[in-house]
Length: 312
Image (cartoon, rainbow, N blue to C red; front, side, top):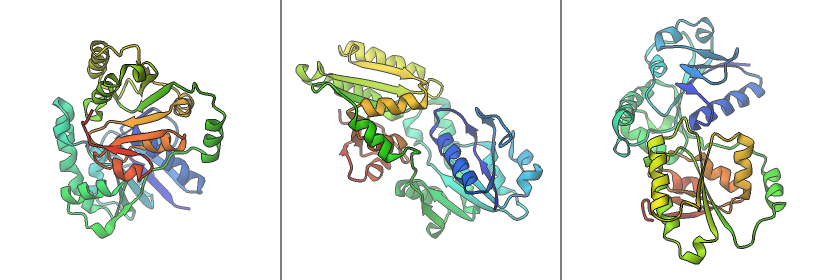
């Protein structure tokens, strides 16, 4: 049995990297290892989640100093990641790299944070190994740091669903033969391109539009609420407000259920380091359409349709 510390900036509900942290914590724990998660904020307080404010305090934690392996998750700049610059007594270190949203797709403070993230990931070269969600992410990492390619292992993400159960649920679902339900899951922010998807729905022939619905499922905490209002306004102006709906902060079981009743999943994003919802949709039996941005073609891997990013 090993002692493993997982380090991340936050661990919250409905956050992609947080979900990876929680699955990793569960998998390692089920394998018999002693695991603790060190974060600056967590929605899951308890003995295995330790809140630490900065790298210096992390390095003074007695249990952390006793671990065999430290896994640092990275997708945005955060203070605890700087612990890589400090010498641990004996632990091997791993960086689990989830990529950084390109600054040119962001504005204001979010853009500044993305630029800081690209600067900070340079210290990943101090790690003993790097796990990357996709080949695309690896290419970005090698561009932004001095990490040797031989130390990077591609580790595609997974979803904790039982495939057979999902297929059985899909097979047992009765749907209206003429209705097409389109689903989009993820943060509602400009970089995800949901405005293109609203415009695409509005561009459908009238007869097809009358039989099509689009539902956005998102976290209100992690979405840009001003952008949400822009989407609502666009749907109204384009005459499709009745065909476009929004659902926020649904329980996981209900999100799974929405996948099972959807016909088509669309990712209209301008950048993705992997995109777990694509896998969730495929497992649930949805047809899938993605843009050719970032790792999306790699993630869909021939199991869906790839279209040019931004092409309504």
